[in-house]
Image 1 (cartoon, rainbow, N blue to C red):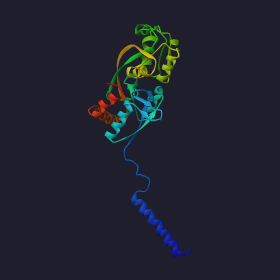
Image 2 (spheres, rainbow, N blue to C red):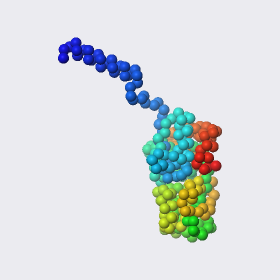
Image 3 (cartoon, rainbow, N blue to C red):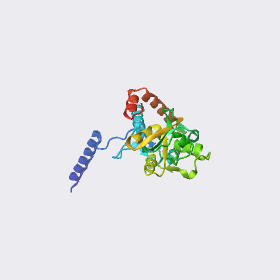
Image 4 (cartoon, helix red, strand yellow):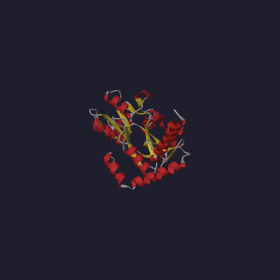
Length: 258
């Protein structure tokens, strides 16, 4: 190859690269929007759950996606084991927890919370053929199941086990509420306790009945690291905008939370 041909080829390559750069190429420019990893319980209908195709859905999932669009940031939904989700937040594996997390003094020692966006009580469910009453449950006369790390589990431990009403061996804890329901259906436990909207979801799809309610008036909030004060302010503003928009009522209706 002579020098003139070589020079011509080099010039052609440079020209083609310049043209590709002007057109933007096949790779889009990276987004300048912040990306936040949102930890959820993937077994927590209707607030957060994983569909059969692997996609995340639920009232809280749609809420944070709407807030992200409104406030100018992207989100990545990350399902996690509930009993370790606060530790994952503190150790920066995720940036927030938006998944029906009750604001408690114990959790507030480790993380900050947004303003409350929902209030729930606890419900007890049993098999449809069971004749137990809520009085039987509160007297510690049945074998109970709950999700480990949940406020339902805390309630049973503090009010039934620690007081001596329920034997420790009669309190079973699970990594997810659906596993507790499976053991209820298989007669390994007599009753399960969890947040009312979640219990209502399972009653619709399983052969269960609601035994009664325990009024705890728990407030849900978005958990954020204590040092992330700017993100906390952004989420609070986003919640305010969401609740003032038509989307809020749309989501409540869609997920049966009216």
